[in-house]
Image (cartoon, rainbow, N blue to C red; front, side, top):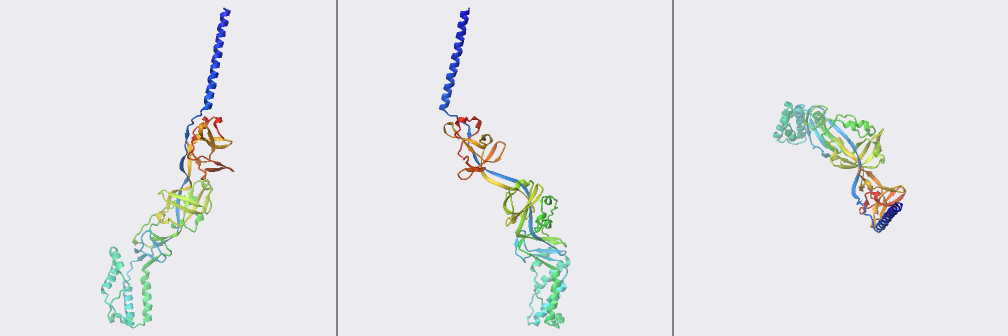
Length: 416
């Protein structure tokens, strides 16, 4: 029994040793084969895209503007359309205060006729024009506003009426100097009831008056801070009106060469790199893009207001005081790659780029921004060179196959 047991044990151990030997042979064969082949890593090519860093803002227009008000109740005749550019001295509005000045005009007409006679000028037959003037006077006296506009356009204060000698007798006895003095007096009286409104500076005519013109004084930019712009300004909306009351706003002139805007900043850290004199890019919600120069930064705790000086775009923005938009801090071309591709070597962040025969190369990258599943990296200059700290590196290009999972790379397959 002992002999049989020993034979069985000996046979068992031989089989164990044979199995171990076979496993070792298989291991070395696999090792040899793996040494002669290379791994096929899962890779992805960088995607060229546009990265934008921006933040929402509320924009308030600030003008050099003047509002003109009615000096009394009357009918206004406007000579400029909404948004029209006018030079200094242009008569934007003519206001008739609806007073009956027919008697003054009759006297003025007789005085002019007397002056002409003294200078040897014979009177002309202008009875039709006289009827027009008389008709306008009656319309004003009767307050028949519906038909006044065409007649006012036809009015000519220089029209002369033929008077008989008896009608001019009291004036013919006066000297020409005395007649001239009376003429000036009457013209001054008539002008008090016919007010002309002329532009005091060149600019844009607008009838859209919001009632906040004095609250956005271009000469008081220091007071326009974040808290100031958060108040309720109670914006009104006044439009063109021909029949007006005393002290009613008629129109305003906006200087189109001198205007600014105030843009709110909810977090001052967003503009930490901005300085006075820098150019700022603003995109309005209607897709309009404007550029201006930072004139002031009014800080209020962790918030701020940027005062931006502009020299154009006013035609597109003047009709509304407030706009919604965003300030674009940066917009640049970058590469987008999966976040899983990132790895680190010698305290430098980078990715593995696949080379031939299963070899890979470590390439440093500079992260611009991150998303949940991907990252934006700097493309570098034309030679794909980036700077990290004080050192420069060649980064990835659009043609590099980036390894998606760096953990699948064996250390022996890394070239650098």
